[in-house]
Length: 342
Image 1 (cartoon, rainbow, N blue to C red):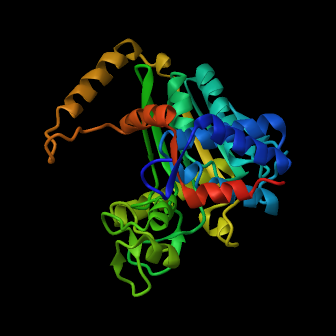
Image 2: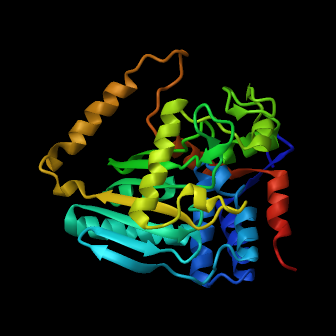
Image 3: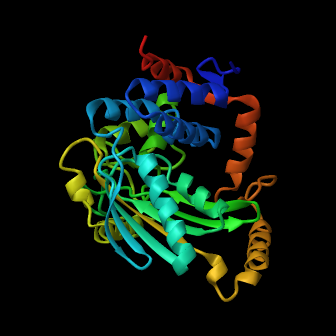
């Protein structure tokens, strides 16, 4: 236990074992249970607790309620060159997303660039998981998912847009540059984390019941009205991602996903590019190094603070959490343990 009495430090080995045991108890096949446990644990190791340990109880609830089909597998519905469309058949989101990422990489190896559309699937948890996987294997990756409506169009009162997380990943040395962001100023997972810790947001994240912009995550969660990144720009970006997700997969758009209060049956897109197929591939490593060196030379507003590229801070968090244990809110770990069948 650390100095914060509300937080425990859980070893990655213990966390993985707990997750796997619970998933096995709820009927998930052995290999899938351990794969999902590994993804939830790795997300937590990397500091993305909102789509790691914090999200695990909801994943189990959806498994219980049948929104996630533990033994289902995706099926191919269409193929042409480097394009494939799959029906996820409501199988576990992380399992489907791993499959789609692997298909995109295999197709990109043959065609240079590939697009895999995945319809009728479940929440992929942390989109960056698949960006890291592809980039570490040497591929450039772009991916996104639509979601249930949880964000209003700019100037609107009611939520018609999803916060539609978007991922770009690029191989960089032995690691990667990975941008993983929602179209809302804060993901709902991040706001839930802040609310559980009793913290205010550092900038407004959405609207309260009076229609005013608020720093209070609980007030925003109650209205379900988050603020798009870049205001009208983020709203437009979200809309186009939803349109493309539906067109490229043949699956449901946000307005269709939102017919129930539970988010399932979403549409996701996975694009992989093999940089070895580019005419300038021999110069890519040096080009990237020059760009990052120039970026790191930025003059910080706060003296002593380092300017980091997307994904860079994950590496430090990963090292610390492996060495010291993963910080978990006590009430979250209690909820995880309560899922264990006696």
